[in-house]
Image 1 (cartoon, one colour):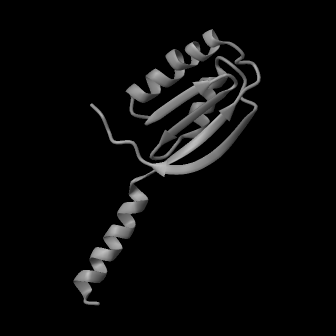
Image 2: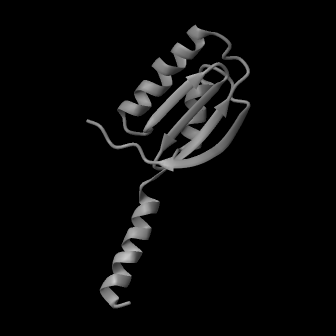
Amino acid sequence: MNTLNKSLVLLTFLAGFAAQAESQTFTTDKMTCGSCVEKVQTKVCQPMIASKKLNTCEVSINQVVVTADKVNVEEVKKAISKLYPVTAVAATATTPAAPATN
């Protein structure tokens, strides 16, 4: 394999890592109704997605799953904790990064 081919293989390999998004799951035991879910979507998810801090933010009863190129766990935890206490944080499977939208 010549030097150019080795470089292309390396770049392709590294591009695969750059295209990955990190995912974190935040758990709370106090977010128990639909209006709680809407509150987190409005006060946490929408502002953090709008400011490009998160790629996605999915909220369900007692759980928030976020993805970003690099999740700032403490910042997300603090934002959720202003509304409901976070009882656990866990890394979830790495997924392909969501395409940026304007």
